[in-house]
Amino acid sequence: MFTKELTDREKSILRYVIHQFILTANPVGSRNLSKKYQIGYSPATVRNVMSDLEDSGFLGHPHTSAGRVPTDLGYRFYVNSLMETPQLSPDEVDFIESHFDNLNSETDEILKITSSILSSLTSQLAYVSYPKLGNAILEKLQLVSISRSRLLVVVSIKSGMIRTITLEVEAGFDKKNLSTIQRLLNERLAGLTFKEIKNSINERVKSISNKDLKPVIRVFLESVSDIFNDVKTNDASIITGAKNLLNQPEFTDPKKINSIIELIEDKDIIIHVIDEATSKTQGELSITIGSESNEEKLNDYSVIVKEYKVGQIMGSIGIIGPKRMTYAHEIASVVQMAEVLSKVFIKK
Image 1 (cartoon, rainbow, N blue to C red):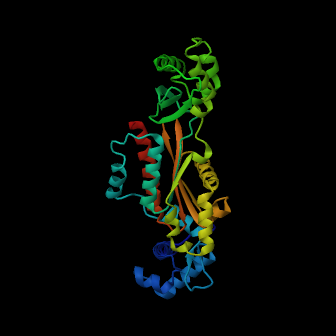
Image 2 (cartoon, one colour):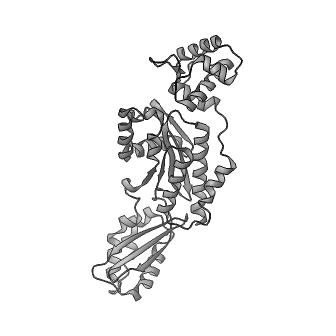
Image 3 (cartoon, rainbow, N blue to C red):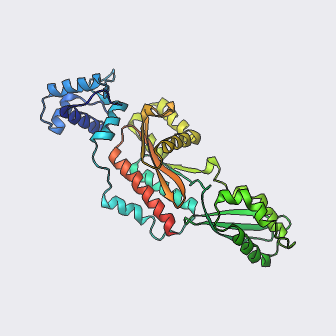
């Protein structure tokens, strides 16, 4: 990726340029850099080095300014070679963990809380996806009567996750039969993956011949795809913190505000980019900077994503924000939230 090996002086000045640009969102001049950071080089020397960095593609030079800004290549070199070790402060770790202490909510609520905490912690757009459930292992089913014709199915997954669905039994049912139906379904389905259940449930329940149980069994079979499928695409992810992007100085241009709104409203773009990133890294941290993405609408953004794992199933968590972000802190935040999220489901 890098066509030139940087000298120690070039690395030092590139680091300071990026730090200053992250702080101010304004192009960085050599005199300002020399004075502010006391880097031991004269403004003339700094200016020459910055010129060399521009020639090498690590810095850009906006036409309306004498200062310079990092390019995607500059940010990439910084992330790979120059930034400090990603870590959160003890107070930030406590802030995260305090929200999950003794938490006993359903999966949807946990993911909403997670996304909200991550957006608050990073001041970026936060993304959390619902785990893909094909390999999820059913622990047990619970059937709860809501009315004579409405039934709540509580699905407990061995990883600790819970999902619920309400079924309409138009023919009605007798509540006294629910415990029998629940026992029979658990005997035949518990311990199987969702994929196995969908592929074999008809064979597994066809021997249940009691006519009093048939109405519930029939509706259950008709609803298998809803009960044991992944969450529908539009509902499979939670995105929070849109106002964080609108507050960033680089997006004050009305055209860029429109691009942010378009990005937020079109979840498919975000989902595609996240899926693309996680498929390449196979569980490792993924950092995509500007034009490294195949999605042109994300040229002004960086995307940091990490998969979280709950037993045999996985989801994704990450942030989207301007390329001018504090990468070490944002990386540490995403990694920490992924680890905490995995532990939360295990505790449940």
